[in-house]
Structures are given as structure tokens and as C-alpha cells.
Length: 133
Image (tube, rainbow, N blue to C red; front, side):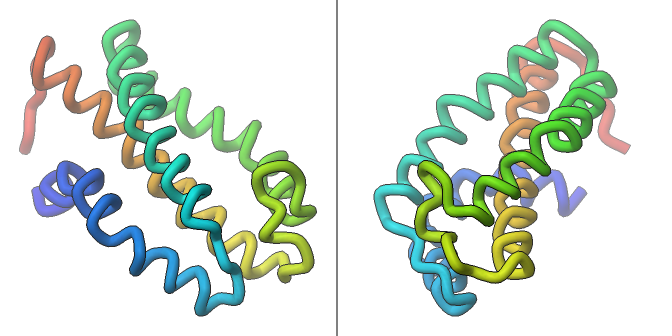
């Protein structure tokens, strides 16, 4: 039950603790530009939340979880490689160790999964039945 409550607080924490998150990444040796972090928030709010909502509307929650896992398994290694190489929007990762890049990648992937699941839960609460045991 506590994890469900914390999931609902995810967008609030992301907004109000963004500077703390960036300072943590900075302590790892990666200075993420503020603009990149803000665009990431916008991407989650207008991308991942609605995507989770629409996916859960079209298919059931178990299938949504399967889609999330499959997408992360297929796209995740490619994105991690591009981050490690410092390609495109991830220039600031260039020259960092794979361990540091992987740590940040996994934290951000976990955050993105949270937004997708939150969108799915909003759909279930609005239009479906959600059994909380």
C-alpha cells in the first residue's frame, strides 16, 4: 500500500526535488543541464503518463507491464550505449565511466516506469476496476 502511495507522489517529488536529483548526479561526476532535466520532466508528464493511460485503456494491466518490460529490454541497451557514447541529447555523459552512466540510466528508467504505471493506474481508477489487497 505504501508503494502505491509513493507512486502517486512521484510527479510531485520530481518537480520539487529536481535540484536534489541534479546535485546527486553532479556528485557522481555528471553535470546534467537544467534544460535537459526540465525537458525530461515534460517528456514524462505529456509522454509517459498518457502512454500508460492509453495502453491500459487498450489492453489490461498485465499486458501493460509486459509491454513496459519488453520495451525496456529492447530499447534500453541501445539508449544506454548512446548515453555512454555521449550521442545527441546525452553529450554531457561523454567520457564518463560505464558504471556511472548505467547507474543514472537505471534510476531514470525506474522513474519512467513509474510514470507509465501511474498513467495505467489513473486509467484503472477512472474507467476500470482496481482491486487493492
